[in-house]
Length: 274
Image (cartoon, rainbow, N blue to C red; front, side):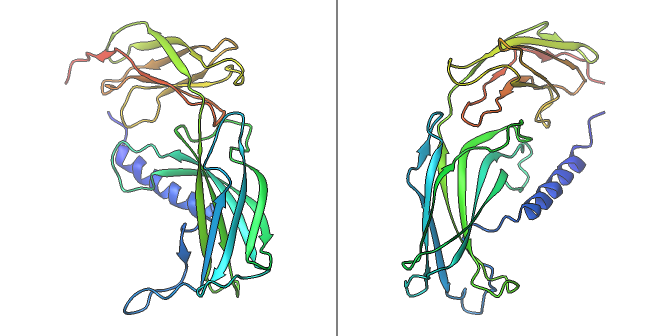
């Protein structure tokens, strides 16, 4: 029987919502103020944030973050505490078209800076990159890093917070994946074996330990996984079920600046239908 995918989707949606709350992520723009009849209230403050470059690459991964806090009339807010953070963005796996957040985030607080007499703030040499040395739980990097700034004029419990954000594009090094399959026609109970190799240009970090994932069912991000050896070689196996009809192998490099590669496999499930 097929797995109870609707329940899984609901659970995934609930988990995503809880994770977002746990990270303390807020809407990218505006203040948490209630609307009034006749239209939204005037924004008392504006928070802007920008970076010195709109794109980074494998060898240049840092940016200078700058911004300002102003009142509604444009006058600067001096000595204002501004909370800074960054999110490394991934695409959400969503083959069902459900109305869930299309973006997964790894969020990191960067700390608090204060504005100068002109209402400006800055934080130099910030890594537009992941900070973890382990593999991400997310598999589909968007190669974008979002920087956020927030200002709370107080009191702290009135939910009046103002936000700004900007996004930097991370130009990733391309990689390739080659493969061989042990059979092109499979039936329920067979084991599909995929062997192959992951490569990318020399000088861009080791290939060893790169995750390789195999999808056999369209609602699954993956159904089997392995890692490459020191040369980038891999072998991944999956037990075939009667409802497996999508066969894709893909890689998920640990480095956010190395792009994954994928290939559709020439495999067909010929299990007789009941």
